[in-house]
Image 1 (cartoon, rainbow, N blue to C red):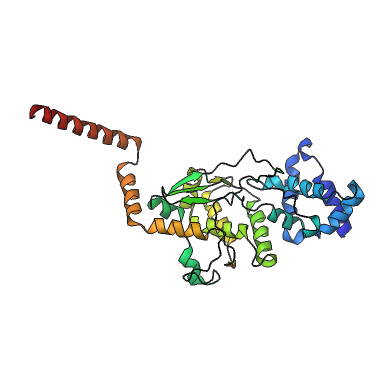
Image 2: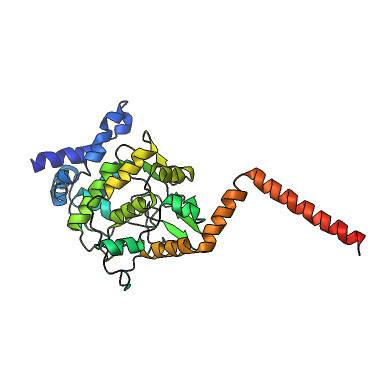
Length: 320
């Protein structure tokens, strides 16, 4: 059975479905390859690939797999040529390790040895670092900006491109930037399978998808949060409603255990919480909302300021 499945996968990843008019009917095959229950040992694929395409071409096999699956991933999958095929467990493992955050991003990979954060498996410690929702952050004068994907860093070049994990927060200006996440029919299945793999097979190893799901769960608690993120281009919702996105994010983190060894966003979470707790930032958010909520408010303010300056200048000219 493994031989039959392996031959099918090798033929599948080398087929050009773009030439088929009803390409949409094959869309589900891309998602089927990343299902945890569908994984077969990668060495089986390598042996079959040697027989079909010639020996010692395992690098090509890994590239074909990533090229086939890239359409279901937001951002870039980045091929790591230094990884040997005998280090790959299966297709899901290959994808997970090639979807890591880019090395030039600003996320933190520091371990959690802060005395106030004992373990992310504890409910108390989780609540001590979790950030507020998008609505609450907006009320604290946090601004959102979409981070553009690095189109120069194409797949299979040495330099990695931007992935969805490359999220940053600038405490100086309160700007949170993150690449856009496209949420469509297959997004939940893709993320859930990668999270399941990280939970059960990569314990105490970096778990970027699990960490990213935690970040989304912090930001999104209702359809209003989804609406805010969509307005700023951080989420592209291809589903029927914003509430459906909120429900997906909630289901992603159900019954997940968070390990403290390599949580990516610890430093960023701390900076966001520091910004949110600052009363000045909340006051500025209220000020902008109540007095500068529209362009006409800015025009009125400038007009009043100009009138005040003219009146002062006129008064000083009369009474030198």
